[in-house]
Image 1 (cartoon, one colour):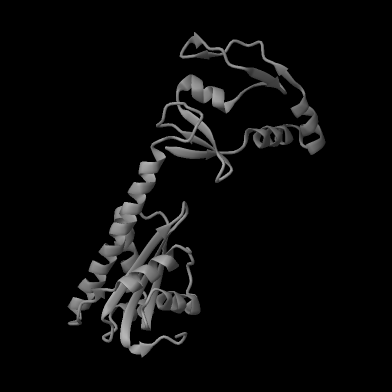
Image 2 (image 1 turned 45 degrees about the horizontal axis):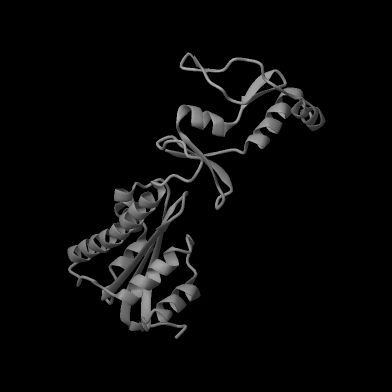
Length: 239
């Protein structure tokens, strides 16, 4: 499991502030670091690690703990964080299994896009409406908009994206922002939210709609889904 750790220096200063009650005292306590003479053991066996005594406590580098206990610790220059990967052996470098994880995530999001299309068409069939056909221009436009991770409508930008990708007509748009949805729950959670919102529901059952595009993107905090339903009888105001 991958976790972000607070930089060690900040943690040391914060601990000193909490212990002494003032930043000046914290700085003084921080500067009084002495090589530790204590024996440090792992599973009852002595290990050689560099340790320092600061304000009465032993401090060991997180990297050294990772190496001794064989879990990976490394600096992520993109996020500017220390990363701990407890499932990977220690290398001090980004874990090689992170690339497949990203690829798996992208595959899951692609599946969610088509699951949303299926669910919307199920709703339309219940109302006796024609099923929507996938329109690649709307798919590309919806995906582009989802990747902005905007959780509210920006109508002009949505319309301009559709035009840029080659869809010339008007369309209805829904957005869903999900927190904590598992990959196999994204489609159902998004569509359920739209079902429970009258305006979003009307977009899905627009009798004039004939095409559909869906985009899904995520960051570490949320998943964003965009639904575009094309209506050839309406006009794109930014054409």
